[in-house]
Image (cartoon, rainbow, N blue to C red):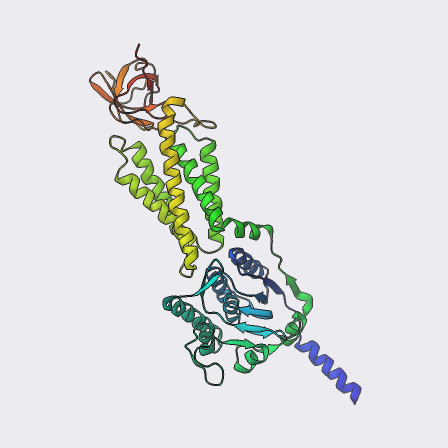
Length: 447
């Protein structure tokens, strides 16, 4: 009878055990911007592989709330069942991630909670404003509500003014030990290992896949550091602005484009940059292009200023979100203002020096004609473009050439492009190339 009982128990255990693919994602340490890219890819790969469950192993003091919100959204939207295993601690933003999972298991000695937002200035910790606390409290409550956990306890982890009878008194933040978390319904059970969690979930451990952090996650974490993001932004702006002023698509345009692609790629992966940010920047560059190539008869005006505002707005929205820490928001503002200012200064310096040095860096790879048709030849109809009839004609620049502008040749005013990059209004000029729709000029030496 005893043998029969043992055999029945074994058969029941085999029958109840489920062979499943479980993807294990681990966050050990501070939650950074790279953490959101790591979890995002892990969930996507798990769903693509048809995983039945995703286990998030947490041992974190917290970190960036905006990164945690991005992870939280991915966890709530995940198709497979999600399981949080608090291996040691899940404080602050880590508690939010645990609450976003369908089930929470606690390791012996594990703790969870203490999630009120704070500001860190140097070595000083400053309490967040009531507005920030209220927003974070609602976020925790909504997350707990979505996963069927006690809403009042989740809110009490953020707001010390919330009282939960027999659990937490006024003026105290809620932080729960493993036993308290289980007793209050935040966690389901205690487990001393990942194997114990799988056993409790009746999942075969042979189907466990440990998803490893990759180099790309470290790259994303690095590229989203505020000062490095500011460097990428500045180099990108300077490179593209130089390319606008000098004919062709050259090395500055390529480097600038690569820097901006890296900037937006990293911030897109962490959930900060969206298509609206890219649209703002592209719209801004288009406005600056109009200012440089179309509105050359006046000084830097409305189109250029609007373009700079749109570019700054695009970069700012790519670096911040609703739950970005105030100090990081300040860093973003400084980075955007500094990057745009440095780019403008560099461009102004180049405009001043280009006529003296005859520096021509455009067209290194693919020289192109910039100007469209805005004139007709003398004595010819609009369709004629025979080359050479204007070469050698002398005139005067009637607008600043930056490098596109207008020149007066006898009684005719035509659009021209300056080979030297920039010439001031009133400078004597001579046509050196006539390609039909494109006429190149340079400063005429007066003997």
